[in-house]
Length: 278
Image (cartoon, rainbow, N blue to C red; front, side):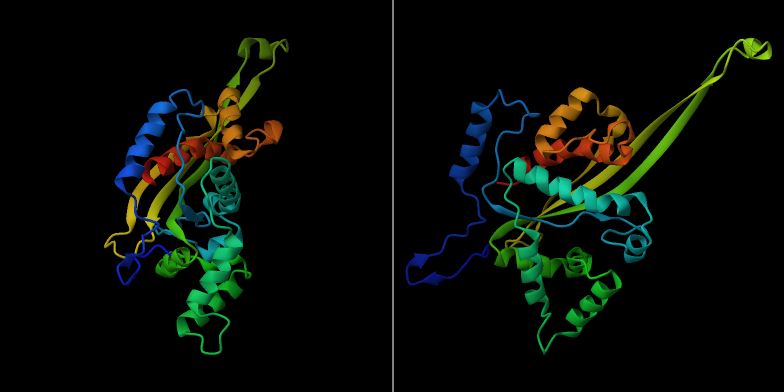
């Protein structure tokens, strides 16, 4: 657990989520000793457990899941969310961030919500109804309304942080340009050529939340990251592939540009977490 803990006589239980001076100094020294690290300066990793919330898509001006968008399959962010969740979790693990397996989080969250018991609370019953509407997926357990319960769940599982990712924007634009010799066209000796370029843009907000009970404001840091598919060259894709363990251009020329734009954020997100989490 990540609470301050009680005391048994003169013996005091140390809070595993509280950093001390030696850890702060150790992190600084690790940065200084690893100046030659290649992946965009990613050098040090938190030793504490992290619960990664499933990526959600902001809809209707608010954060969290939009059930109607998810059921209808609409919205670029809603369509991207499941893929983003898998890639983000994979990248965290590859970079040494210890995420708690989601099936464990889901099982414990059901206990915290009181589901599966005869005396289930009205709130838990409402959550079960929402799950049924959304098809019963484990990720539908989580939304902004039960964030406090998720924090408690993470604490029960020994996690010190909850990471909440929300896709604020996911769009794909196409720009077509036509070129050729109009005079030649008139005499049938030239053809007009149309070139189409696509550029996807993704903005994703990351919130880092502490599970320590004594904090009045558990939100440690919030930052929005922007990804652009046109910025992902083959060279940059190789760096991103090394972090995610995937392939940014795995689908060849037909690869979803929105997914590539999301890839463009992943190393920046990992750096942000490593900078803010002890």
